[in-house]
Length: 452
Figure 1: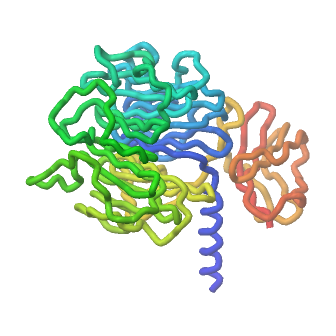
Figure 2 (figure 1 turned 180 degrees about the vertical axis):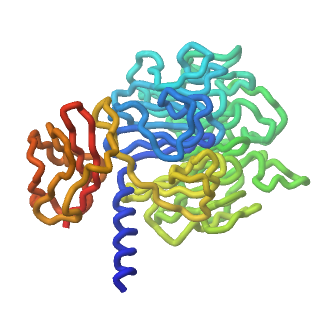
């Protein structure tokens, strides 16, 4: 019984320790997340510098991108090796693969750390896929850059190396990108598409037309709420909660491989959010349950060669948002915990391995950098007792100048400017905290503290 109790405590602590994430996004075997403290993290494949840390070395665990704590949004897609991000001040940033100018900094060379795109401070939302990028400003205008071979930028002419406005309309509200295809919804809830249509991904009743540079309305419906694209297919949710999809079918039947116009998926009307991955889709219902369909590791414990209808990932109803990448998915729950599953090539799941996961597993919160000095991992440094009730002592030969106590989601609770190695922690509520000790050389020593 004691062993079972200890195992239960360990599992509970690991779940609490993972409750720090605000937003996540899945790229081409590269993942990104923003913590509640505003720091940006990346892990997985790094061939083109998409991790943003100045190297091309993969990482199987989350690593911090710079040391800023004002990141608001980050976006990559299943076919994307470049990354877009927006800070809380409304500035736009990008990095990674840049052969076609999709980063937007005026060059076609890869970018290994985040660079600001222009000087505007009114960027609202972002989307990118493979070789092109889209963004919305707060004034409702739509902007595009990168490769324009199939007209995916929504304009005629060649490639664009800076953000360029798409037409003159200022009533755009939702954007999405696929493989050389773009989608958007206007404030009147009409759906529009443009770019390549070789798999009927434009949804306009045709296929095989490879260059459509003008945004064209999809049907006549005026009740579209959100849209997502994965490779050469798209899906959308209407304001009535129904789910629709079109483009290349997941099972690619020889008799009719393409769906040329939006077709309803099932008959439910309680869909809330969705995202398409490379060969599959994931969606959340209004009751907080998570569903998947298509091909691959869908999160229910088995590998699917194909399933046409959405199946539940599990019985939990606490899912908040979802992101789908290249054969893997990441989901956030209402408590801020991050869960991952699917193919783990290049360590894209961030669990420290490259082993495929058939079920969702939690990813613990990494520790944010307080300064430019790296955290020192010193086995002689410790705290005792731990767990502790009223006091805790710092063990190790350290010339202390500052002691920081953080909540598990990265919030600074108390700073002590003292060399005293015995701390009074009676003021803390029961729970898990992060204790950081700074020495006279500005090195940081970190330990997890459990308050009883």
